Image (cartoon, helix red, strand yellow):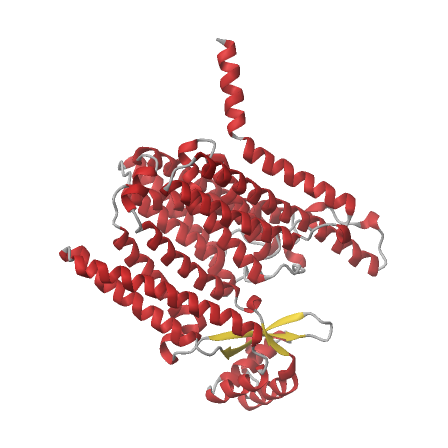
Length: 533
């Protein structure tokens, strides 16, 4: 009997081997980085790109295994995902050591010795959205590996790993420059709070993926999924570039200014990118036609409408891809930025005033002080700034990380609906049973709920230590609370009302969308104390 138990224990440990090896390997990489030093070791940015490549490769093999089951495809997908988690965590760890070296160099320049180096919590890499994105993607990747100890759930990586790759892609666009946090935020609660947040977000991502697969297994038609994904895509097109895509058929990108020190500084000046706006408008119109066609099919079972809906959806995918390609290529090739900005500002009567107010804010003036400055003076200062710094302005994918990532996410959403529409019944047959998916959705939602609760508690303690109050209804605090309440509703309706299946899946989808809004929306869209990220 004891031999049977020993065998089962060894078998269970062996099933967790990929996750264990990924973490231990990353710790070894950090040790090598400490021993070899920065000049002789791969950078954290390069490790992040390797993780991105591994996540995408693993997703392809997991998807292949769904349509054409193969032991080889399953193994390659699993171990490639393991390498992705290994590189992902290694990137974050190597960045931690690089942050230590940076702190040491700053101390040296200021005449301090290594014995005055702050303790390791001071420079742990949880200072901005790049750091959080690395940890977010790792949370999704390690959760996928832990679940993959059961072979029936390894197909989950076909959805979770592309999402993790999109998060790393966002990190790539943000850029891995280090930032100095305000002294008021220098607390050991920072890595605790942000670490819990990133891992909790990763579990919520996996719960979202399980919900998507459950709906697919439960017989939700891919045409219905296409309607919702198309609405999401149109919303993305409408919000990027402040609605100018649909109002003026233009898409404009933000600019960077080269500082005397050689550093880059984002400037609230936007440049119209040729062709991109019309392409996004065309893609939006095609998606609107797709919604109409699939709506007719679902209501009247019209086979012709279904055929045209799929044609329009595929055509929209092509147009989206062309729009993103034009955007990225022209961001890298456009050079006459100064004249283009002057032309755009001439067409906007309030552009100079907005720039002048922004410049006054950078000087540390308070809103009531800025309100006393004559508009003519603000416009004069802004005009001089554009004339003097026009040659120093340039475009970069790092200037619009959220917008560009949103466009790529919209493209990915359309692509996945098209993939799910191909031999859908074979795909459904390859997925685990509804009961297993529903159970996994409940477990991951429970973990996400607990971690979001810990996020709120640790955030409140940190806020009291830094700002002298536990709760202030800041935009990010409110967003995190709403997301937590959504998962609370998930659990409440399941336990007290007996809601399972589709009802729970819809809660999981909404909860993750709120998590993403809290993760991104606050930092780039809403003002608040968390906008430093």
